[in-house]
Image (cartoon, rainbow, N blue to C red; front, side, top):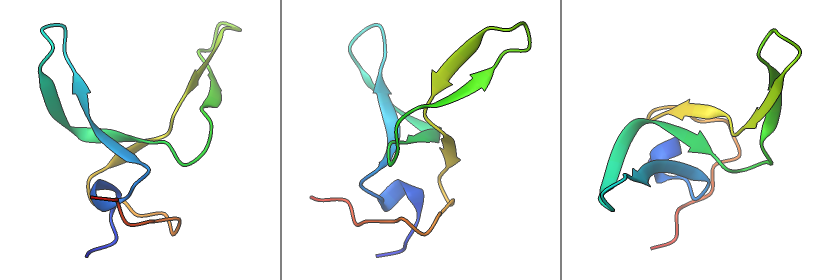
Length: 66
């Protein structure tokens, strides 16, 4: 299996929309580590998981369980 974020157990490339349908996305989230803070520039901070693309790979790849 190719080591990429789409086949990693930490990569999330789908979400449920407002109608309850599963939607597959091209940009995913890496859930390897806790959400990271970032500043919005006005002194307000948010916490988000890092965004990843389908062919990204960080070296922490673990095979997704079936």
